[in-house]
Amino acid sequence: MNQEVTQYIDNIDQKWQTDTCKHLRETILQSVPGVEELLQYGKPHYKKGRKFVCTYNMAKAWVSFTLFNAASLEAPEGLFEPGDNPDRKTIKIREGQHTDYNLLAKLLQQAATL
Image (cartoon, rainbow, N blue to C red; front, side, top):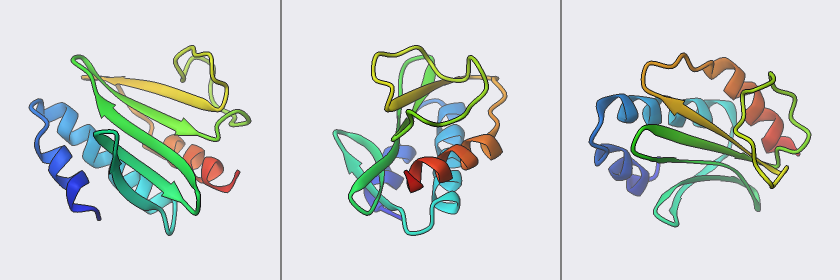
């Protein structure tokens, strides 16, 4: 685990966001064997080989989780935020919202192999 990412998570003010980021981190590291964890552009990024798999960051009222290589991912309607780039899919996780980490793990595995 990258110490800079650990520090990023430890510096988050809101406990629910810290917990969400820790859970995302665990899900990513367990779902994508050999993924590289790094802090880039001030937020955690995860890379496999030469391709980025995902990133997450904080906003005032949510945690934003973005999958790369996501144009052909199959996910439930409404899971992702609307966006202009079909290769990037973003989920906004809000306090108290149920997050299906098993589904995220499957999507991460798909994105890492594309």
